[in-house]
Length: 360
Ligand SMILES: O=C[C@H](O)[C@H](O)COP(=O)(O)O
Ligand SMILES: C=C(OP(=O)(O)O)C(=O)O
Image 1 (cartoon, rainbow, N blue to C red):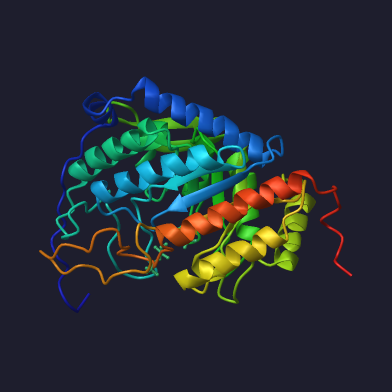
Image 2: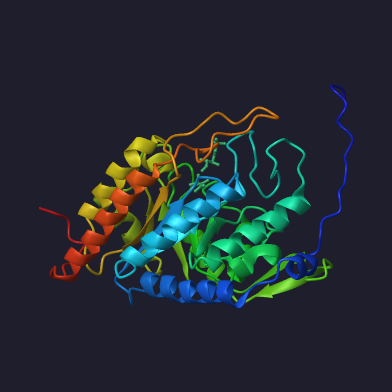
């Protein structure tokens, strides 16, 4: 083969899952948050709890101080709207990229390309535990199939993203996760690939991974009964409107799946314009119906709105501003949450109707 010679492959050993758990052990307080939230999210998805699941938080975590400040504020918001909303914080530490870019705090916690994965694992686990200890449940995207043995006990909700939803190994991993898993529709907009992922993840599988001591092994997974589809729009545009929601729910019902849906108000549903997330959320709230398929919303939200260019090496990022996708500001997020809570209250007094009927 001609061309440029490849750079030399290098290998750096990584801590075992057990060593990380010994270093950052689970605490009873954090475990209570995780367990209780998993049960409540399951009940919402199954239609046994009429509150809305609200997955809110930064597109990506790049600083513990920022994330903890956000979590402290969210803890207060959770108390305020707990009767109407199940608020879960996005603690997203692995970023899938369309082509190239920073791959997240877990792999590169210093944002400088040094890829200190051991520090990333320790700092991520410490952060997730601290968020749970504040009483705020944690949601994340599971991107690298190697991460769950290190972090799964911290998660109340997990996501398989639009770029990996068609991947066999991600579906297999989801079948072994101990929490409800949302599957995004594909980047093309295909809901079929997400519905297929729900079916695949419901089954038992064999997942080749590492055990607590880091030795490779075969994890026989039980299957995940709480997989569901997350609508995030696609190449052809948004899919948060009533017709798209009805179509997706009908597709799931036809496949004999629970038609529960979460609508991501960001990504292709907002045209990646953070200022549109509120309008997308409001449009979904306007078509919610008692007993309808939409059980939750996702917002990409930060302390401050917008985004900043990824910081050059050695340069400190602006505090509270996303370094990946542009996010809704804290204040605008609060407005959306207040409206979501008011909608849930109003729906409790609304008559049931068949959401499948087309509006005349
Ligand atoms: O949510 C985050 C981004 O949309 C996703 O990681 C893709 O980012 P990119 O298109 O900037 O690579
Ligand atoms: C990467 C994300 O979303 P998607 O997979 O929908 O692009 C995300 O939610 O951070």
